[in-house]
Amino acid sequence: MPRNHYLLIILDSCRFDSFVAAAPTAFTRLGPLERRWSWASWTSPSHFNLLMGLLPHASPRHVHASESYKRDFARYAERLGVDGVAFKDLLPSLWLPTLLKRRLGYRTYALTSLPVLNPATPLARDFDAFTLMPTHNDMAAMFERLQFDGEGPSFHLLNVGETHYPFALPSEDPSQWPRLAGLHGTLQRLDDPAAEPRPFNQPELDALRARQIEAVRYLDGVFARLADLVPPNTYVTVTADHGELFGEDGYFGHGPIQHDKVFEVPFLEGRLR
Image 1: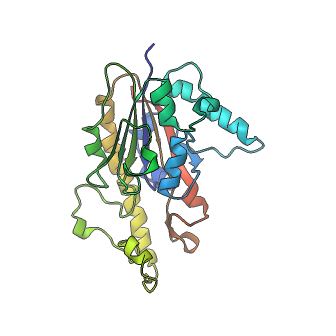
Image 2 (image 1 turned 90 degrees about the vertical axis):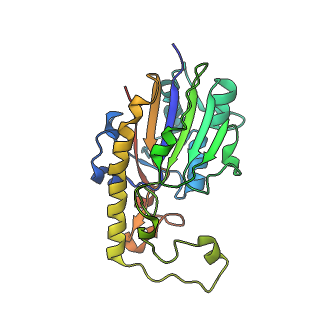
Image 3 (image 1 turned 180 degrees about the vertical axis):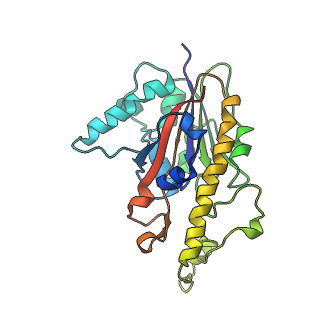
């Protein structure tokens, strides 16, 4: 029995209830939709956890952390099509690409949309190819770069940016993207202590949440094409790195925020066919 190809698809910033509101049909063919919890509230540290093999957790009650890790890592046997995978198999690197590449013979690839996930970061360790896409909001363009090697299994990390601010689809004119003060030119603002964004306008934030929901609907159509592009022995996990706040309790965005909506994420997985 050949090992599975494995795709880990991260809808960047997609909060759980936005995914539900979009009522996707292609995504949900994978399996039951679960509400899970991200390990971090910002893209880079969240992807670090994901690449440790720590997928978003179910926050179980009355369970020791070690038991929770054991249960979740047992699922990698199904995901990869191997006989048993345990947390100890990640030692000493604690790095999923290392386990896949050096112990299980996988080719490892990453296609990322957000600049904080680029080949110069430590996240690129033990990837055969780690590519920052030319645009941040074009999942369909990633499909042209998927590689399924005939001699062995492949692992692909896809970081998808349509669900990240400004929640823009590839067909949109960038000059028409919504722009809120303080969200563009971040590096310049960090260096300018006098720069202060204006207060957020709730109707604008409501419109941004509607854009995220529409982005999920669009991506559902893109995802529907994936079944025709991957080999039959391909297992897919779809989730998010964190959620997003749209004015709830005075919060916007993600990062230095402790709020349920920035940790609640969708989670579903299975085979496409």
